[in-house]
Length: 331
Image 1 (cartoon, rainbow, N blue to C red):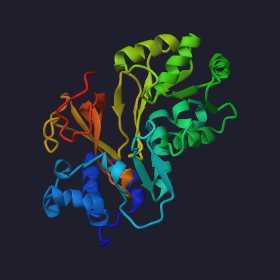
Image 2 (image 1 turned 45 degrees about the horizontal axis):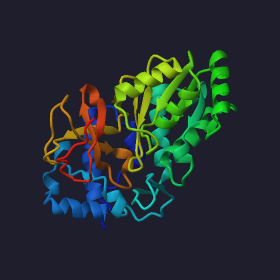
Image 3 (image 1 turned 120 degrees about the vertical axis):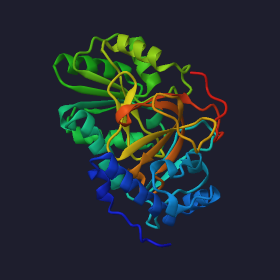
Image 4 (image 1 turned 90 degrees about the horizontal axis):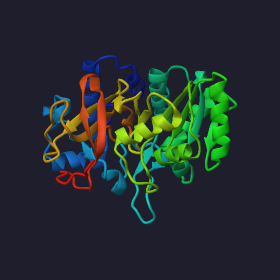
């Protein structure tokens, strides 16, 4: 296939304006149409006239379910690693074939620095049992690297050794050390059932999801419990997924902000090709330009609202795989 739309990958991380982002996104769209057979077939199914696509809203967004049924790649380079989603036994999981893992590393390292500063300023503690207990987690790949980059002997993973983690958290916090505790939601709730904290120097970052271990909760209730249990004024969150190579972060109040190479659009729940205004609830579409080698235009199954400056809120999920999303999960 033609490579005439080839893009210098490093340009993705130098975007400094919305105009620059849109120009790059349109270039990436044409490149992926030319070089990704699955995406090309999807665009052709929608009868997309590539030459007439002049705005982000005109770009077709690939339903995220395609990562479960197809190999989504935009080049012929060898696959360096495959990230897979979690799922119960027998469930078909998503797979993200990564042909250049350095793009993922650059994306999460630059993204973290943008929102939190130098990683070496923190001890990074991770409570991610569901992810640690399986292969192929992109979250574990990222956190493992952040632990190494923190260059701190106290940084590390915890599985079910809650007593050790409790002791370490209290000890580090009382010493005045800045700490980030990254945890899967249900494991953080398990921790505060065993110990109530009053943390002064620790950021609690939840990665979402009960993984079938607990009943799902609305964000306000969840964060209220976590704030009370850890003795902190707010709960941070990370928004990422197997099918993306970038993260958005919430520094509190459930409002996520994106690095410059991600944009969010909100689609109508009844018509996936129509977009709705800021502040209205709809399906979250993500443009992740770090996905240059797979597909950068993903229609997720998450529900949310977009606000000013490309910030957004996640409110729940579609209750099935219906691309039109007629039936919504009650949140």
